[in-house]
Length: 289
Image (cartoon, rainbow, N blue to C red; front, side, top):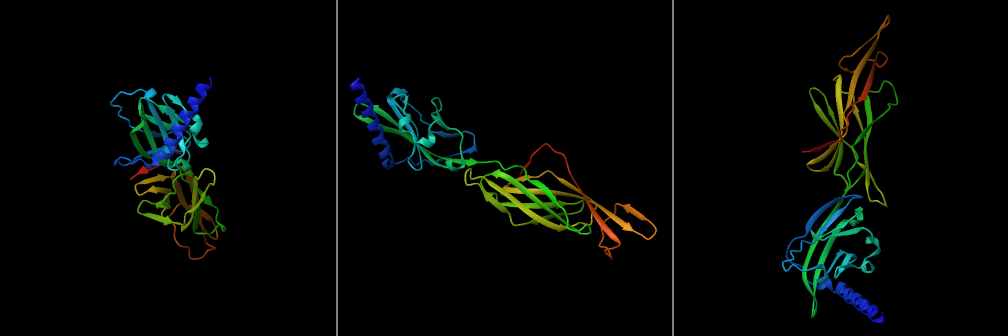
């Protein structure tokens, strides 16, 4: 019994010494693979071991470490060694022997970074490095579909439309957020300073803008809010439809009819009302240009 304990300690010491020395072993010239994973889901860290000699796991020592040299997973002669794994990774990994891939579960934004796998062959003269590979894990989080909210005008006779647009729980930080106003004959874009906040815990972003613009002369107007994540990737809000109504007051009667909006000569004679309706849609409009 004492002999077995001594051998177990010796194996552990060998592996720990190996972990401390791997940074001095040069990598192959191959570029790191880039793998994407979504927040709170599973990311893959491949090793791509060809195993041309058809070696069994009993003959190998396999482990992954992150860019800070913290061990994610270790397999020593076919047996997992959780004692050598950093606490932040315990219970979060699983090894796929068929594809020589380590899966990292419940990925967080802070898991973004570089990872290396190392495979050593246990021979009579000791452990010999036979394979190593580097990969980059990029963690993303999908922003919610932008949502438009109308801000009530301070005066009923205002000819200005005020609205906000917001989107939450996304990563990385988006490039731009803007409002697009479309009529039958024209299209206009309104930019604003994008307000953003980032969670200290999840590192996810919430973003919003506030926009004001004059009521257009057309009677039918559609508004979209756009969140630009990349140069060619944009998420659109559901469309908002605006109906312009002009109410003319006369001495003997009042008639309300839908006409093109014109600048009133006197503010006490003409009042402009804006009816805004949200078009029902079940789809999250994600546009790749």
